[in-house]
Amino acid sequence: MTSTQARRMRRPVLQAAIDAGAKCVQADPDLFFRADGEPASTWQAQRAEAIRFCHGCPVRSACEELALRDGDGNDRIDDLVRGGRSGSELATLRVLQAQRLKAAITADEASDQEWSELATLAVELGSEARRMPTRSGGMPHQAELLSQQNERIAELAAKLAVVRTARRARTGWEVAA
Ligand code: SF4
Image (cartoon, rainbow, N blue to C red; front, side, top):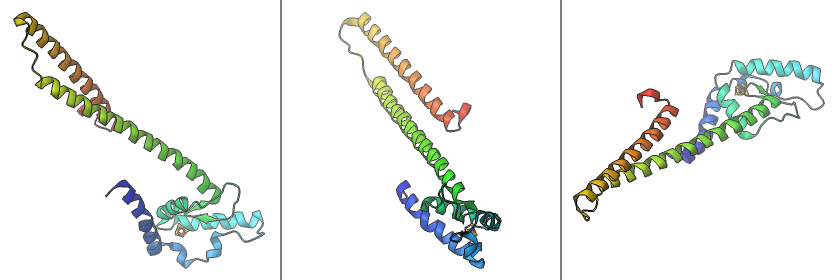
C-alpha cells in the first residue's frame, strides 16, 4: 500500500472506530456545543464537563484526530468540545501538528537524499573496482595507475561508510551500524 493510499484509508478507519465506540451516543449532544448567546460563565462549566466526559471515551484519540482533519476548532470562537478538546485547543494542536508534519517531510527528504547519495557511491565504487587500468605505457606506468585506482576505491569506500553510518545512526542503529 502506498502512503497516499494509507492516508486515504485512515479517515474511514477513524470514523468506523468512532461509530463503534463513541461514548457520546449516550449523552445529550447539546453538552458539546455552546448555545447561541450562552454566557461565558455557564459555558465554561459546561465545557469542563464535556471535556471530562470525553476523557472517559475509548475512542478519544481517534475523535481528536478526526476533529483536526475536519478543521474543527477556532482560537477566536470558544463554542465546542470535540475529542476532549476545546475549540482553541484544537486550533493550537492543528498548528503544532502542521509543524510536526512539515518536520517529518523534511526528514524524509533528507533521508531520500542520503539514500540516493549512497546508491551513487555504491555504483561508482563497484565500477571503479571492476575497471582495469590501461596496460599501455609499460610496467612502471601500470603500477602508478593501479595505485591511483586503489586510492580512488579507498576514497569512495570511506565516503560510503560516512554516509551509511550517519544514516544508520539517525534511524536508530547507532554503533551497530
Ligand atoms: S471523544 Fe468525546 S466527542 Fe469524541 S466520540 Fe468520544 S465522547 Fe464523543
